[in-house]
Length: 141
Length: 110
Image: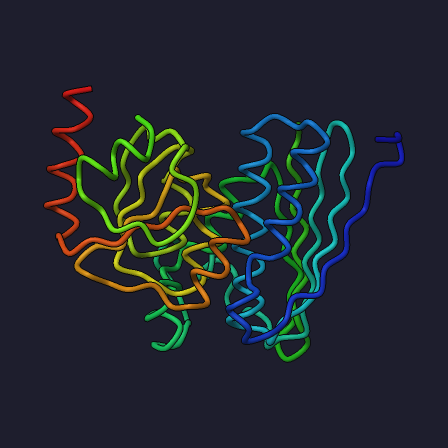
């Protein structure tokens, strides 16, 4: 890997649970090939997966960009969904606005954003109602 | 303990995936985000969820295998995704509790 790092871009389809997690699995595979420690890979994969699932459930999809540097991995998730009305409420474990049909698939436990924060070193949320949400997460190696 | 030993001892129905992986522990759960954050590498994951996302979660957590309890059958799409991701899936008629008891006895016997 060069000092400039490696970039990965993914389009996350909305309402397509069959491919949800594809970006996370792909990133995980690349990080393993690049020789990152298993715990770093696990943290990135969990945070990415939760972000992907959130975009599928709430925002009709979006994009994920991952910048891999030797000492830091940055994930940028962007969507044009409805935005998050109350970020501090959404950050509480157990709070979810997911539909019952989503819950029946095993999602909507209200663990998505809390897990993303828990498994990353920094997480910043920019959200605007009716416009969308951008989340930047960093994991230090 | 290798999955082929575990599978033989518990008479599990093998749906797909390698039997050569090493099972190190057990995790039970159906809420996928919860499982994502608590299951660890090498776990035998017992669940009644059978949709395609189970394959993704098993792969990301590096669970040794998934056991679908209570006679739950996997969706065809789940089997396809599991094969792609090298996820091992079994099914069994027993409940999660009964499977845990059997697995507990098996692990303590070595």
